[in-house]
Length: 166
Image (cartoon, rainbow, N blue to C red; front, side, top):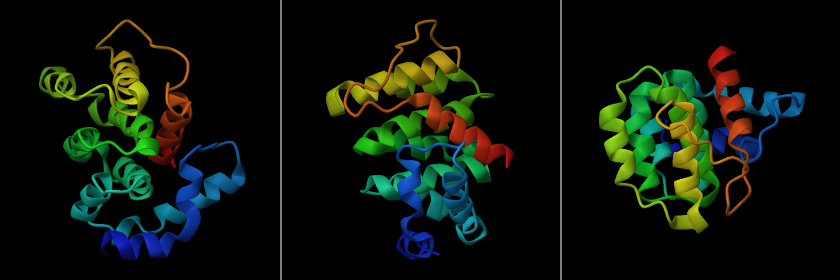
């Protein structure tokens, strides 16, 4: 299944990924709707979603990547930050926390340093800092919400942990 077919299959379920609330049963149901297509999405399709030109596909890609095993998609997630899409920036870094949790940090830290931190009024930099804090690469928590769109890193991290455990 290619990205366009996959997005058609899940309909508007992706909307619940912008500001997810896993305590909301309707949100969980919509995420489960996305997870129903997991078996139809190859690793290649998931990688394509993660680097797609639109934030919607990227958000769906995060859910599927986390479910399929996020480590294999870490490179695609980092690649997406070189060409960021607003609503997908914070979720990308939240998914990277799971993808890189048990990995050797040196190679990943070098790649993160090379990413332009300025796009979207600093959302990329703030999100990378939040990710580094959660991975233990930094002792400084940037706190608060993303500077451009006010996203809460923790709701995305909670969503991805729920997806991993459901």
